Every structure is written in C-alpha cells, then in structure tokens.
Length: 204
Image (cartoon, rainbow, N blue to C red):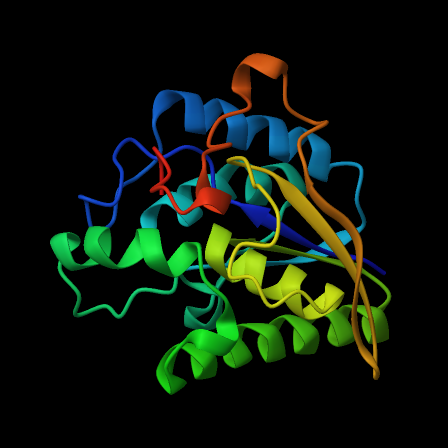
C-alpha cells in the first residue's frame, strides 16, 4: 500500500514569516489534493504541526473522514529557535548543497524524517491501507533522496501541493513517483522555484 508525501499548499508569506498559513491559491490547491485523495484507500493522515500543513490537511481530513495526527518528525528543517532572518540567510547555500556536507544536527534531523516515514509506510503496509503525510519540501526531498540514493538536499523540483508516492519493505523505501502535479490545474502549479539552483523559493 503506498505512502504519499504531500507538500503543503502555497503559503501567504515566505521565509520572512515564521509560521504562515495558506494563501487563497494555497487553499484551492489543498481542495484539489482532497479531491485526489478520495481515490486512495488512505486510513491515516499524518501532518506537520505548522499552520500551512495543518490548513492543507483540513480539506483532506474532511473528504476522507480522518483525524489528522500531528507529528514533529515531519515538520520543516529549521530549528524552532531560529529567527526569520536566520532562516533566510541559511537557505540559499543549504538547499543547493548535499546532506553529506551538513553538520551532524542536520544529518540527524534527516535521519529522523526518513525513519519516521519508513515506520509509517511499514505500518500502512501491515494494516493494508494507504498513508497520507502532509509535510515540507526539504523533508520530502530528504525522503526522495533516501529512496533514490541521491545526496542532494533538494533532489527534484517540487511544486506546492505536489504528491510523491512510495512503497516500503524491510529493505527500505522505494520511490514510485516524485512530486507529481497532475491533480492540479496548470494555473495552480506554484512554487516550482529555483531551489535546485540554490535560490530561495517564493513560498516556503
């Protein structure tokens, strides 16, 4: 049974805001994800506790009759004590780099994300249902990198509300599809920024 990692919808502010909610366009993206989710067999919805992920999860939870489970392990990469200015200063070099170049604290964070997603995927396999996880582009990128052996912090471009799917076995995670946007109308595909080139995305 697949596990789906869903990037949150477009936020109303960028990295200069510590915890923005969704923009109006982000809310529309979330509604499209909810419509897509009706075609899954998801019986579990795991969500980063930040506002933009919680707001993305709301229509999904309503569509599927699920209660979101909030997990810090799938939240974003920033230390909660960092200021907005520190986040903006950190990002360009960080998202253009490789995990093997990062300090131990960031590598530990990555390992926790990957281990949590693998645990959720294995639990879904054992229970016979799909699992949905609403998270952030660095966390999702870390899982894609783990599944594909790619050391880049951001291994693929990733739009807001993009969906990546994985299967799991005791050998680890296998990527089925990466950052797809087929569920979104073309006018709602946002956030395909220059993250690969190390530029700060217009929406976090």
